[in-house]
Image 1 (cartoon, helix red, strand yellow):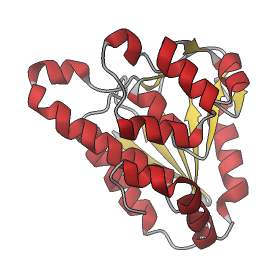
Image 2 (image 1 turned 90 degrees about the vertical axis):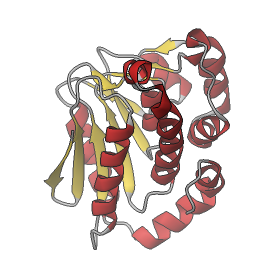
Image 3 (image 1 turned 45 degrees about the horizontal axis):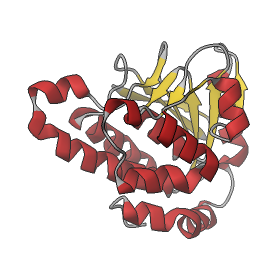
Image 4 (image 1 turned 30 degrees about the vertical axis):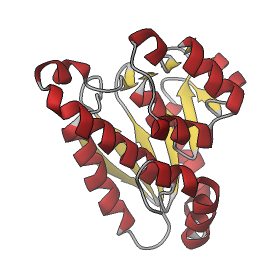
Length: 219
């Protein structure tokens, strides 16, 4: 579901589970992978990428239709994952290779840098159309990273941002072609991998610790 590829000091997380829905299994795997990476000694940066036309299509609503009791634990687990990524002790880059919707958009937002495919895919918080409001922790996580006007527009309108609009709003940092989006993300990550990780995590906690705690993750 999530495989780790090593490219020198960068670890690339390949999330390949169709639409990469957020459910109990995917959250558990995310934490397994992050536990493994925390144990890495020395230079490190992390890139996450989906496959095909999806970075992540959000919460697994189809699963909840047959197992509604799982929705609460999944939402709580998502909160903690967002908080953990906000203050993860290495530089992180999201290679947004395709659609990033709802919880998938939130996950992309909490990375230190975002590189989005320029020819296909939308970044979107569609909850206002779905009748499923963001929780306080979700809003805190997204708001900790992205510009306030962009967060307000995304939350209140459900707008679908293509790559150019996402760059203009400050939702992503840059774009790249489908063929180069992952390599560009790895390049950006590698440039920071050798920085002092103790200082980096201290700075992340200063910047984003309150939001991480709001998500239930203690920095």
